[in-house]
Amino acid sequence: QLSSLAEKGDLEKIKEYLSNANSKIPDYDLHFCENQAADSVISHYAALAKRENIPFQANAALPAHISIDQIDMCLVLSNLLENALEASLKAKPFNRRIHAEVYLHHKHLLQVENTFEGKIQEKNHIFQSSKRTGNGVGIQSVRHIAEKNGGDSSFTYENGVFTAKIMLRIQKTAVSRP
Image: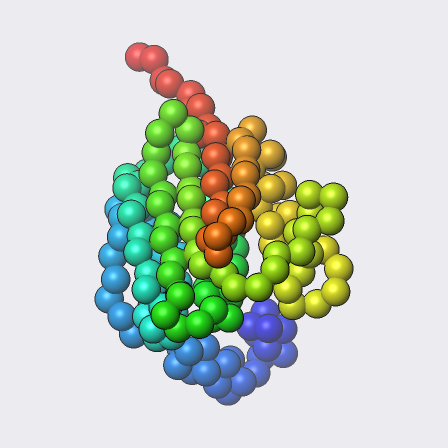
């Protein structure tokens, strides 16, 4: 949208767009870890959850610099947290909860748990969209990113709790020798 407006040279529409987008960003000062990319994603969804009175807990222990594709990590994390937020919004207020864990281990682990109500539709191990008919794209995208990075993913749901566990392989960096 911004690119299109910039190509047209419509500075007023760009200002209007940015002002509108800025008004939708919650103004909470939250901090979860040293990794700026992950911290920004977690903080954004924590603020959205807080605005909706959804209990949100995140344990994130990521250093400022990690050897992993930051864009892929943020895509996975934001996808999982967006799904968790949407599922929690559909649950009864007393049953809402989101818990995220992001830390380095042998590989990189992201885990998001959230409550849900209703039935999760799955066909041939592919989750069906809760927003439209057909396959969901979010979890398929998460699976693809994990596999692309030599990692793995698992998704379970029982007793009203959906759990996503994602392993993203840490990229080996070249060691320079003097």
